[in-house]
Image 1 (tube, one colour):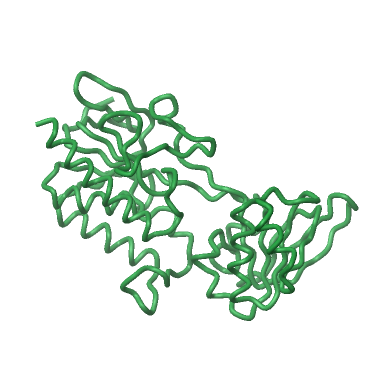
Image 2: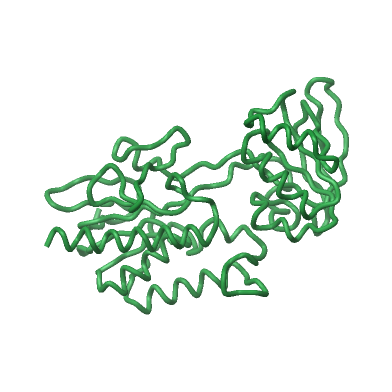
Length: 309
């Protein structure tokens, strides 16, 4: 494996947090490289339209927003490399990030590798994502005014999203594979008391169907072993996130949900390593908060490197 040049900071991930960190690291005159295994933009590229990011009253396409982030990061000197971080180790006074083809050395790291929405794994789920199938009610809820939608899940996040969606839709189903929720009691009480919400207990989604957009879901009642159609305009999947932390396990502290533990400065348990965005704990899964966390991490890195000098 070849050895790349040494940097002040290696930023792992080119989503909103990583690119925002790249902008601020570049403005701080740090030698920064941003590693991204796919297309810069991250998880939000699965969203059809963003209308809750400040400064865009009419909304903006996710790709256009992230392309602006990328150009701005590069304008300030951040280097963007197509590579995937596979491992991290300490070597003398630097951190070494092992990629697919070469290694990157730096005095500090910002882990912004993001998280993947846990999917149902059903037919047509990918094809209809952004066309009725969604993973974020806060992002996409306003597109479903007066519509019939369903939320899949039974935890805190699923019921919170269900309550939020009732502000827009005319009818909402909560689809849960068990006969009781796992969410906290107050959320259960609110959902069960809402006249717009109907709970479909002991049910799982077996397929999403529709020509150009979602038209229906195929459900199976696991207790009665029967299958039925549910006409829908929207299907919100809320069964959890899988943070991309496989390559840092055993290196930094991780919580029960496999998110990286950070303090108010986005510092991890390892000096010189910071985390931001969906991969970090206590960071709401929104573009704006990811950007703020990335900025916070970059400013902390600048302060950390000054303390070394």
